[in-house]
Image 1 (cartoon, rainbow, N blue to C red):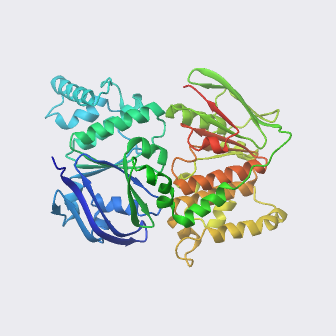
Image 2: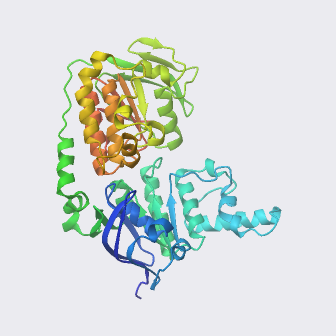
Image 3: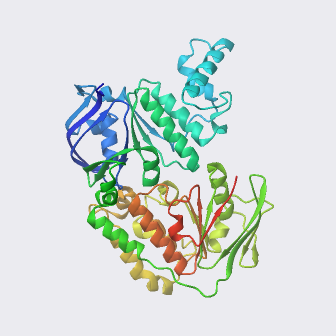
Length: 475
């Protein structure tokens, strides 16, 4: 039996000042297919997804044709009724039960005892069909990351979707859960819903998908299947291109200094996590990684180590000197800094120029001597971080910066601050292969300068290459 073509893109072209460009894109998505979308930031995937989802401000400006179920799409609303975009990092109605979240559309009139029972039975059936065992009376905030994702997919698929575009970095999921997650996605697709899966992590994409569309600089350069062994070594070349691949090789050549003697620089004692008391001892110039697969406790560990959340029982030491800081500003004063890379809304001030953002950590200002000593690095960094139109003012540069450029700004400004301790939360979760190499090179630079770097992650991806010590914490 021949598979039906659900989506057909033919010779699609568009330029957008916000989302980049797509050039002569053509491909098909068949009924019940699961296809991964691979590409660096700025590869055109973001713009393509907006066209497919029927974003009116984008779709109307595209040239070429989009076909849905064999019929050419003339209006964006035709796509919006059949294509659903799910960003798993977005919050859901956490105070709803699973039954309410999945069954609300099937309740009628007043929601009484009978209607609640109908919702409960409907939710149980849908989850059971996917092989999931979830207590549907529990709140969405109380179930596992895998079950939350499963509920999200069911919720969107039940709205009449024929194509789901899923964006997910699988933060907070164990390796075994990711495999179960892939199984759920494929079972959903077998029910007649095609899936385009988007993740910046090649490792996660390969766990979920067997076939990929590879984009580079706005073009579709390869449709690749996992069983194509001959092309396996060529995949990075398709994905990166010669120029970016050469830049990554240059970044990865950053070497670590060998230190004969390492002093204790930071200690955290009596930190309670998931009912267990822990202590941490960090050394000068070392990179220590803490892997907590439970996303809730992963974030909590980061907040406690960085002083964003301070428990009365926890004690902090800079070397062997006890600190009595009331908030995170006190930690910054002692050069213990932390950040969530890529979260520009919290850490990059978009109304400030590039140079102002880089100087931001000097809360007490650089001394005149220090400023002139560092001025060449400052201006060099700002010259390298001019994106697009060189005539843009500094704040316009920040707004239009891509992910890798924002990472550069943030890491460069902290590097100029010369911290004693740098704590990073999920540093690779929101970046592509180039961004990951960029972060790794900065981490090595910090360690070479004597900074104790702490990485808090929910998985081990990228850690083996850069971490001196990897600690797994059960929570």
